[in-house]
Length: 301
Ligand SMILES: C[S@@+](CC[C@H](N)C(=O)[O-])C[C@H]1O[C@@H](n2cnc3c(N)ncnc32)[C@H](O)[C@@H]1O
Image 1 (cartoon, rainbow, N blue to C red):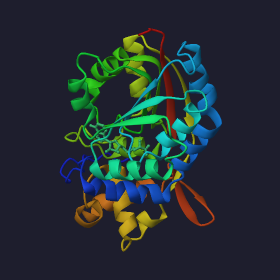
Image 2 (cartoon, rainbow, N blue to C red):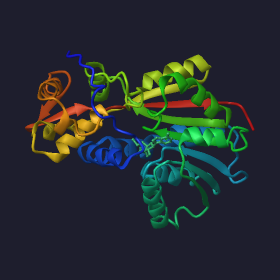
Image 3 (cartoon, rainbow, N blue to C red):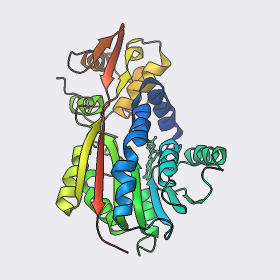
Image 4 (cartoon, protein in one colour):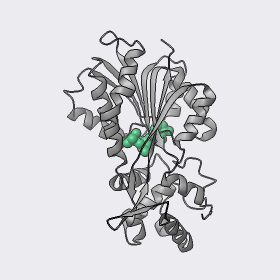
């Protein structure tokens, strides 16, 4: 495996429009979101909703309090809400999402589903989790269910225990965390092309979160949702999508245009290695599995 430090490339700021341009490119070449939405359709009621009832949050008598961390365009959250609403008439949903554009998309979706979401009160907080933690330092906002889907990568490893402990201090019930799983192309590229100076690369894998939960003594169950990304366009040097995808994988800006040719050659060779990617119907795919972590607290409030 190659090992080349890419710290010299311009870093991708996860709050910037440049990030979302690259995230959109990724979304259009992967079935990851589709698989996650299928998991919500098939598993969410058994894995989450029934346990919230088990935690004695009684149907009808209580307003279910939900926190979404980095909810993005809200597609997954709205789907989860539809399942929650089969059991809970009233829901308070706090959305912590720093991107104004993503909040606008989420609000649009809520407007489209207005009738079905009657009974849900949204609290829109356009801020980072870090800022929300400061604002809720007294723990006055508490939650029965917290979701963080592919959104905890922005927490630096050294701060992970602190943030998970803080979130769990507010939670009675379940937290659903989804994050990249171990054999994802992201983790392979992170090992082969490390960036020692960009602690915000989105390669915090699910196992890192599991380690932190173990340290904190929080019980959890884990499983994997397989998915893949079509990376064929990364090999077409004229493809804008290919360049955006490479940037997204490496968490840098304009790697395709500004990366030294030798580095690009090594990255492409790595992406085309057996065991890292595979071919189907003449197209090249890389695995981007999602680790599902369902953590529980039995504490009451
Ligand atoms: C990869 S996207 C995932 C979005 C959504 N959860 C989904 O599954 O489609 C990551 C999200 O985390 C948000 N985010 C980035 N930094 C954050 C922070 N410090 N606190 C909370 N959310 C953050 C981004 O704005 C983005 O919406």
